Image 1 (cartoon, rainbow over the protein chains, first blue to last red):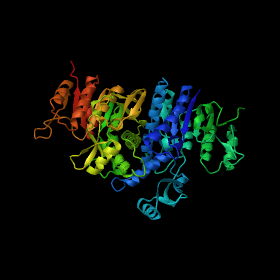
Image 2: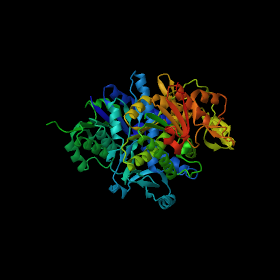
Image 3: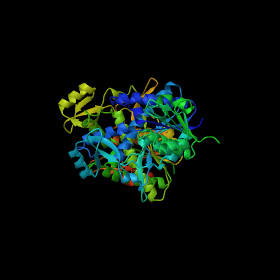
Image 4: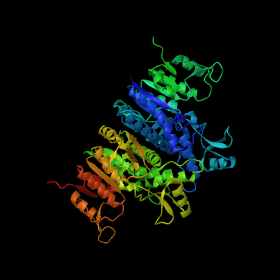
Length: 314
Length: 314
């Protein structure tokens, strides 16, 4: 076995169309926790990361709803809150599953900061919509009052756009690595981590969101993981996805995956950053990356499901 | 030197009368961080815990304000969110101070669960007011709809009462101990930790709040701290506090402190749980506890400020 960095999709933790209650979240966390426990039980050292899209969206909405009585917190603080929220649910779910299976594995959740670069072009072109939908009038007011970048949304209404800079480092990486090496299951870098830039001697949180799969790739490198496992709601990488000729690709060389990325064969959807995260991990020296459905987690690690991306053995 | 568990008051992090903005919180966190850095620079191993009263109150208010659009999260989840929020601010403030002083000390924040007992009498008598103030009518509606215990508040209006059970264990204690022993500054057990009870094989979060000083005392034992340092907004334990004869007590034996507690000489205010936390740490084998003002932190550790509670040397 080895050391695996598992990335759980935000929707693997809060299903689409669910009622968004704490009970629903706990059920989803339980499903994810069982898959993580399967992997830990097979002997892997494990670090888990997860998305936070739906959750931080709700926290932003709560901030907005109470704005006249409680000063809204900036996005970086809201991301940290979502790490506490989701980490707590995932951690207790994992604790339950381990306990029921007679396994003793400590589980901890770390607030995690992700280093980004001041000159990242994303800061000049905020493109990622977050938080509530507004009327045009309210949107224009917010743009003026808080300096937000606001834009009409395809779903109707206006939303705030924030930058999504490239992750460069995981501030807590060395500590997480030592914990994982000591057998602790670590939940870290939730929502891609809180983005921070170095400003003189200071790490300053910025209002942006980091792609959670790209952050997982950096995290995997930072903790010396052998494998990056990206779990989502499709079976893996498809050729001709969305057509009648759709075909799951069981294995890809990093070069071939890079070629698909550059040819735009993955579309602009959510698979593109996953494949990029996977390829970059392998190019940086990782043994392999796997993109698979949540339910296939353990099989995928064994190469029996999902799409494995690795350097061809020479 | 040795290992110290530092408990920062919630109001040491968010000053009374402050405007409650993120910037104000950052300024307060910075003040606390400088004191913690002084102690770390003097060679102590450090675990930091903190209150969350004002912060979790605001999160509850935000949950209530958005209740028609986002299902409110239960209190245990809100406590976990507040750990992420405050930990993030304290952690970045500490990172800044270390960096400016040329010190290299990793700082991490852990979501922390505090074990409590199912049969704790507090569960039958919820006494701790939390969250927003309601009209009587709204209070009666909430009592019916959500099963809350509601009561009129001395400040006017009605508030929810939740249990404040005794902390018994810190679930993440062993991991925190190993981190601290490895030189990591750990922020843990924020707001007294998320209270959890063992329910069959499961750890189940409960809607309650744990006193942060009593939790700090258990945390200090769990990480094998030599000293428990409780920082607050008064200079220490006073005889005849609030009168013209008020007199700071520089040192107390655990026995004498216990006697003062039992005689009710500390009033029902916030000093009582601090002294109890301090005494219990010493009675459980800790070398000493110190209760002092935030600004006197390092001097207090050296016995030059605050009130030191210890077993008399025989």
